[in-house]
Length: 310
Ligand code: G3H
Ligand code: 13P
Ligand code: ZN
Image (cartoon, rainbow, N blue to C red; front, top):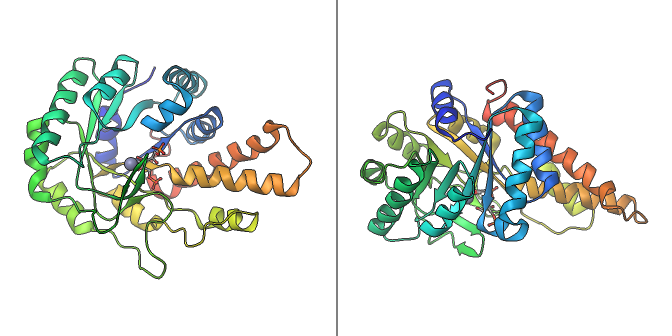
């Protein structure tokens, strides 16, 4: 069956590794990710944004993920990514999700606390785990765009009060990652505030921390996209060694969406470029699925460290 994230995070924290949380919105993406997890016996979180749920429909997505549970046998959590209201979180909990994020990071602190607590109180009745967020990432998620100068790092002085008062099970923090494929300006040296992560973990001993906006923006895929008719100059992500360092610290969940999109788009562009007369979607979606599987395997082995932890 589907599982919540409690046991996954406990083991990940103690073992010094992280669980991959991958955004899904169609069959090939679900299959590519979970084939990798089966091969490497890795637990995984499949997450659905409000936009993905609108695109693919709640029922289709839950059935696809249930199929992956049956086909792979590895522990899978089905998680709502960036829920922006109690109602959306409740709808996903009622509809079979095992984990939800309430993202009140754009709200005034007291409102964030109030709704996060409401979500946690409701979710825990059904053994559903809850993630919340403090601090603001830059970048684009759904239709919200936060400019780099409006982003703000998490204030470590707030985390204990927030977690105690809300009862949430994990906390996403802002330490310099951002959503999307353009995380740093050209020429800018990628940097994360590991000092903030360290201080947060000292104030919350044993408590699972989440990193959003944690795609590497795999350079090979960006190159392929540009080579086969795309235009993504200056796409740049978080270096793998920084993510590996975070996963050895208190970070138990690493969110990846952009790398899936890049893998899929690179493979489809290459295939169609090389086979201009082909028009069967299976012909170009099969290499897209393969690219996702290999990318996820690489992450499990080199960034997350969760191989063999299923
Ligand atoms: O946090 C953002 C994720 O990449 C989800 O993106 O809202 O466009 O589905 P989306
Ligand atoms: P990326 O855009 O870095 O893949 O981040 C995804 C994410 O944080 C989903 O919540
Ligand atoms: Zn996110």
